[in-house]
Image (cartoon, rainbow, N blue to C red; front, side):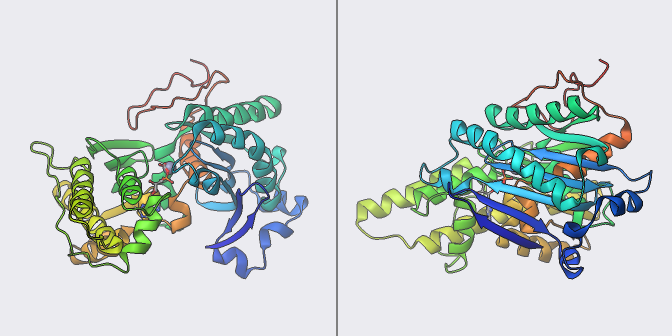
Length: 389
Ligand code: KG4
Ligand code: ZN
């Protein structure tokens, strides 16, 4: 993956992501002219304009047939929220309003397309921050209304799971997927496209949330995940022995709050005894404890449910410790391991376009009464915004 970055005056980072193939061909997407697009696009091809705004990334992408990313634009506000130690929902919503049109224009232009060339518009409608979600949802509805193109609402976590389809052209359900993001820790069986059985989930903090809270406690600041990942490389993972919670009667569920408290105890103890904690050692030991639980549950699920394909998804899936151990354990257990490139693990719209394609093929269409659903459940999700109902 090749990332073109530009820091704007307000601190927002504008990114255009291309895969290496595209770059090898000399920025093929930017040089396509309209006539060529219509020639290259066959009638069976489905081109989706996808929009994502559930948290602090405004993103738009053009995706062909669910797996071919023609453009992938992310406008990341992370620097704006860093000073507050976390995402400020009001700031996020306002920035989405400012940035979204530019992202969509850039996504269409890099794909060499106009709105008339797309077959449908897709958008994340939950879960996420309600004000942030509403910006993308309103934008998608406006485009669908103005162009008469079909509208498809996508579950954010289904998007994360579908990020695996983009670079792994051979990956097809069924498979097991470990979804670990800032708001979710789910172990799911992807039975078919858009069909999920949740076999485990967190009882308290999500994995990403635990990374963020521990990073703040040990003074690494926000965003915690990448900072712990980096610090852990310099530390001793066996310096501290942190608890790995097992939930009786729910062997695939997760709990990270005990681990977080244990880190806080160590910090307080060190303060009382007047000695300084080695940040890198705490980071490495904490990361090891989280990663061992995540990998242990995922491998066990594959073995017990009889699947030989395992994917990971969500922001925490870019953690280097998790990727390494998962790779090693999958190899040792004869399981094929799939993971998106780190830039496709964090929030982006290409993954929303990938998920939307399979909904489109099933005939799923949403009406203009689609609304943001901040706590939209995965799996048996509500379909009340579907067109015609
Ligand atoms: O998927 P995501 O971008 O947003 C949500 O849908 O929540 O996930 C964000 C989360 C944050 O908690 C962040 O700290 C974590 O993913 N994260 C990481 C890493 N990169 C991002 N956690 C551990 N290691 C990383 N390298
Ligand atoms: Zn996410």
